[in-house]
Every structure is written in structure tokens, then in C-alpha cells.
Length: 397
Image (cartoon, rainbow, N blue to C red):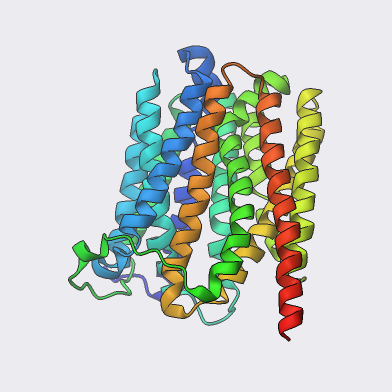
């Protein structure tokens, strides 16, 4: 059988990227069921997010360059197989162990997807329209998370086997992606050096250090809030917003993830400094609204506030990453991006781990209030740092 050409491989890589992230969101709407039926604690659920982030960071640090040696197609197949292994682990969740194993495998798979599958998308992207590949890379993961969460929530609420059906459906999707990968063209010639590529190479050239120091105050609070929604989204929907629906839990999770591309688009229309300042102020105000609506059990206003936080998050992340990447060479870019994502995942994992411990003694409203304080500190640091950087640039010119 003749392999797919460039267009077919691009479609395969794009679909596989979206499917991988969709699969990673599949277990989240079931957290309420696992907590009520199997007795999983808030600590267990927070650990599930932590091990996911640990898996993703480990994958980025150690496996990020494997596709340059093994080829994009084989690396894509490995990504999909790991995600399928995670889905099989979730079929037997009656305690924390299968959930933690599955979430770790999902983290490793998503880390591989953000390097191997993303590179395959770029390799096979058509010349026109030029915006297509960047759109897939920026919107594909968030779109996948949203679609996977909502599909899973719907199947849990309306399917006959809520513990099995979401995973069986996503396994079928992953199987289709595997078949498409087998039938798609390779874009990289295999070469030796795979073992040496496992050595982490994170770097930050002097030209990007100031922008990175500013960006840290954005990466940590925004990714931390995303980690909180991953771990506690279903609990917020059930206990604070008075909805036992798995679909409502999925909407709570999706509401913070899906709007990010909108924010990224808006950020492109203003300067980096303005995007960071306006975005962080909006982010803090949105968290304040989240706390108020969560405390008063207002589901729809909570979702609106969450969407606003997601838009602000997308704006500040996009502008900050662009401000760092613009100051490095093409050869330095991969290492710098690895450092950015490692910082972001770590910034999500540590607060989520702490939140899991405090959630056993404090309410979710009190826990999310701590995230509001973190965001406020980050916002203040951004306002001061951006003002100082802008003043220094003005004096230099």
C-alpha cells in the first residue's frame, strides 16, 4: 500500500496530536465517581496531577530529541502506545495506584507529543496557508483537552458503562491514529546518537535572561491554576457548585483550557509589555470572581469567570514565550523551550501537591484563595518588572 504523502502525513500528525491530548483529559470527569465510589481522597487526586506533570517534565528533559534519531513516525507511534497503555490502566481504577500509573504514562506521552508530534506537524505542513501549522501547534493541545473532557463527561453521564465506555472510545481513536501513522511518510532519516540525546540540555542565553525572569512570574501562577483545575475540577463541580454531573465537571475543566487560544490571538495585537500587564491584572480579577462564585455555588457565573481567566492566561503565556524565543537563535530555541516548559510543569506540580495536603483540612474555596494570593504576587512582580524593563529600554535608546 502506498504511504500517505505530505498532506496525508500532516493530517495524521495533527490528528494524533489532538487525540493524544484528548485522551489525557478522559479520566478527569470520572474523578467524582472515583472519589464517591472508590474512596479516593483529595490527596490522591492531587497526586494524579503531580505525577502527570512529573511524567511530562521527565519526557521533555530526557526524550525531547529522540525523534531526531528514531524518526518522527516511530516516535509518534511510541507516543500513542504509551497513551493507550494509560487508558488500559484506567480500566481498573478501584484504588489510587492504577490512576497514578495511568496519569504518569499520560504525562510522558504528552511530553513526547509536544516534541515528536509537534515536529512532525512542522515537517509536513503545507507552505500555504502559512498559519495552519502554528494554529495546530497552539490550538491543538487545548482543543484536544476540551474535546476529550467533554466527550468523556457526556459518555459518563449518558453511557451504559461510565467506567469503561470513555476509555474504549478513546482507545479506538488511538488505534485509528496508529494505523494512519503506519501508513504515513517519514520526514527524518534515522541516525545514531540516540543515547547521547537522552542527556538533558536546557539553556538560557544571556539575551533571554531578563525576559525569562519576568516570564517565571507568569508561568508559575497560570500553570498552577491549570493544575488545580485538573486535580479538583470535578470536586468543585460536585461539592461547591452542587452538580453531580460528569459533564459539568468536564465543562469546569474545559472552561479554563479552551479559551487560551483566544487570549493568544488578542496578545498578538498589542505589545508584549501591555499583554503581560493587562493579562495578569485580568487574571487576578478573574480568580477573585472564581472565588466569589465558587463560595456562593454559582455554576454559570463560575464558568464565565473561568473563561475570562483562561483568555487572560493564554494572552500572558503567549506574549511571554514569544518575548523569550524572539531573543534566541534557531539553534538555541529547543533548549530554551525545554526550560520554559520544565519551569511551567514544575510550577504546576509543586502547588498542586501542597494543595492536596491542605485540601484535607481546608475547603476548596480556601485552597483556591491561596492560588489567588500567588497570582496577585505574580501580578505585582510583573507590573514592577515590566515597568523597570521598559524604563531601561527607553534610557538605552
